[in-house]
Image (cartoon, rainbow, N blue to C red; front, side):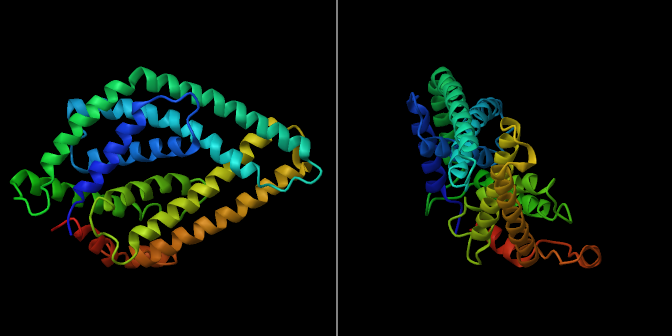
Amino acid sequence: MALDLAGVRRSIHKLRKLLEKARSRPSPAKVHDLRTHTRRFEVTVEAFGLGDRRHERRLLSDLGKLRKRAGSVRDMDVLTGYAATVSAEGEQDCLVELLEYLGAERYRHARRLRTLLRQDGTALRRRLKRTCKRIERLIPADGGHESDENRVVRKQAMATALRLSGELLVPGTLSRKTLHPYRLKVKDLRNVLKMATDADGKGFVAQLGDVKDAIGEWHDWEALLTVAAERLNHGTRCRLLREVRAIGDRKYERALSLTNRMRREYLRLPRHRRVARASAGPGPATPVLEATAAMAT
């Protein structure tokens, strides 16, 4: 078990390929991959302690802008897919109006993404290649000799994983206001742990993925409700709005339940707040330590 250099290299190579050609109409799958691999690269750089270097700092800044543009396109793709599944008996005009708006917004955001790719894509690919070579020097190949610098990087990645797992204990009680920001912590920890070749012996990484997806799905339905309420002028009597709100409420309950179960089973967070304050342990739970230990050898 060790840091997965091959996996890191594949992800960066995939990102460079996605930047290679700016398509006139990027597909939902390509936009999703662009967003995902950009975020993985950002987490990798931070986990290896490269974020304070000038080259990587500038690269992260430019990739961050690209990720946000891709995120805007991805949001429209997801919302359109969800809207198309809503039962809108008697509200077909509302549904058509909503879908037309989402389609127009998707086109607008995709055009902005394409412009940014054409403007910065070549330079970003070149700088990504440079950083990839730097990362390869920091992680020894299988069977290769580990230098002092290699050991420092490995310890840095382990420390990052432990820090992020500790952050998952906060806040003590999750709510609609805090659940989506919590998802960002889950994503970062999952991405760091996935850099190990065998980090999921106890299912912790898979559980993080389930929590991430459940919270993301709830948040997307909430976003769809916000858009629909702003664009449709039927008020609370609109059956389409009521249906979207009801689905969002069910998604929230499921996401909250999955997240709290993960916190109790893997992070040693007790069911009740008063018990949590009295019995919180001094360090991470065993599943977290086992997942992190996969980076140690």
